[in-house]
Amino acid sequence: MKKHNYSAGPCILPQEVFEEASQAILNFNNSGLSILEISHRSKDFVEVMEEARNLSLELLGLEGKGYKALFLQGGANMQFLMVAYNLLGKKAAYLNTSTWSSKAIKEAKLFGEVNVVASSEDKNFSYIPKGFKIPDDVDYFHCTSNNTIFGTQIKKFPSTKVPVVCDMSSDIFSRQLDFSKFDLIYAGAQKNMGPAGTTLVVVKEDILGEVERKIPSMLDYKVHISKDSMYNTPAVYAVYVSLLTMRWLKANGGIAAIEEQNEKKAALLYSEIDINPLFKGFTATEDRSIMNATFNLSKDSLKDKFDRMWKDAGINGLNGHRSVGGYRASMYNALPLESVQVLVDVMSDLERGA
Image 1 (cartoon, helix red, strand yellow):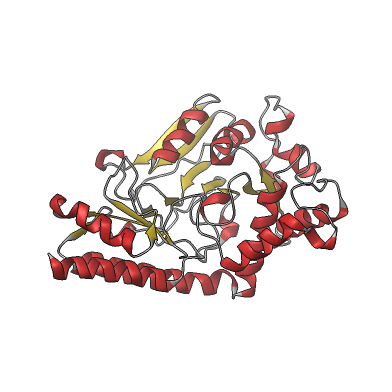
Image 2 (cartoon, helix red, strand yellow):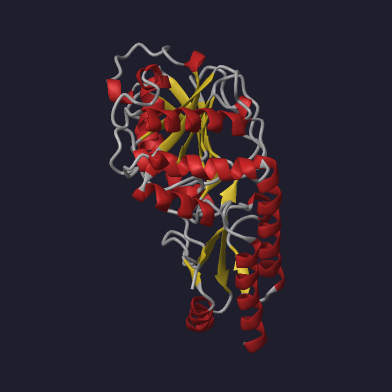
């Protein structure tokens, strides 16, 4: 039986992507070779990389606007370092809303002064700070759009004159934004785009080359741009599956269409959390993520029963992160509304039987 997959990452992907990707393992593009064994310099894969880079810009509405797309390795953790290496001259501003932004701040402090303009750590990252000021004399402002562990999401991004860098690892391609307001976006593929192993970086070229330090080639965005993401051997299969997922997204109406579905899924689950007395949400209502819903039982005595019920219903990956406890339902793009209804039915059944 196919599971209802709520795992936070690596995440659910569309069934048709699995099918096409599995066929490519046996015979990619009728080449008689597996996608796992073809050369990354071959015409077939060069075309994959080019389409993946172009399609990511198309989906984000950034074609012809001075941006370059890269598929790199090392996950978001590597980007915490690369962002600062390439952009931080003297001082940068960071918004601290999660474990991941805390890690980004730690790496940035190796390169210069870090001004944490606001933090929600005082309430275990259960809300998004608001009303903070971003200084005009910093090299850039960094934020995390969606916080996978704690289930918060920035709904309105601050206005600033300085370059804006955003970690969109867990909500990339999930909702409509004016992406031209961001100067650098990065996202580990395994949250909402593809398998683990590659990271999408979208950067506006004119913000690069400003720092005085020498940057090692593997950490230099300009080097990767000059080599079309082929400076070193890329994660061939991860890039290919990410391309298939982006093709799927485009064929199904793009970001506008998927946002509508994501809003319906989130509304369905949060409605049950709010009306069911056996459950309580973890995050501030106005900051709830449409990707990662975090909640707890109001009675610990029901935990064993509830765990049996959702597992018996074919649900997978619902346990919350150790930093929060309780439960986390990750409703990424490929999760169907029907899977959310299964979870809601289980929660409702628990109330009736309590």
